[in-house]
Amino acid sequence: MARPKAKKKVVKKAVATKRKVVKKKAAAKKKVVAKKKVAAKSTAAAKKKAAAAKKKAAAAKKKAAAAKKKEMAAKKKAAAQKQAALKQQLKDKISSVQDALKAAKEELAIAAKREQAILKMAAAKEAAVAKFVDKWTKTQMAKIEKSLKPKKRKKRAKK
Image 1 (tube, rainbow, N blue to C red):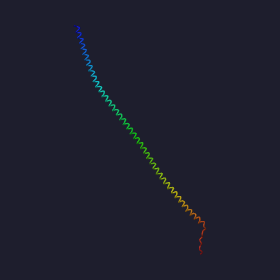
Image 2 (cartoon, rainbow, N blue to C red; image 1 turned 90 degrees about the horizontal axis):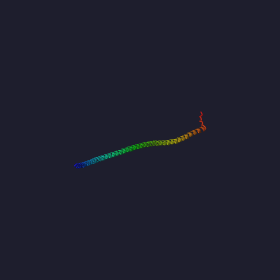
Image 3 (cartoon, helix red, strand yellow; image 1 turned 45 degrees about the vertical axis):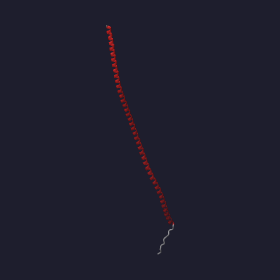
Image 4 (tube, rainbow, N blue to C red; image 1 turned 90 degrees about the vertical axis):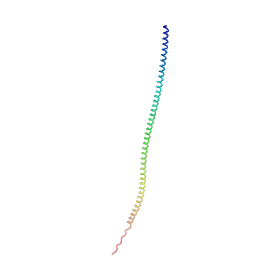
């Protein structure tokens, strides 16, 4: 009888072992399911994190692009202002040169008028001098002719 008892123990052990194996398998399944749930949760969380990071990166990229665009606009505006200032300087220079040219033209016109007046005066002077010289010469010649004629003496009345 001792042997059958031993067999029963073996059977019991096998059953017990089976139960332990089943329990272990169930526990392992639970662990796998739990891991899958955690993995699913973690992948969802990871996906959310990745999406948030992606959004953050996109926002940063947009912000950088906007900053670059703003910087380029500022540079363009500064260049336009510089160009406008140079243009204004050029206009001022042209205006001052035009004013100087206008003044020079007026001076030239005045000088030309003065020259014409002086030439006219010189011609009038020459004519006046010639007229005076002719008149003076005539009077001098008349004096000379008179002095050359014999003098007529007045006769005195006898008393």
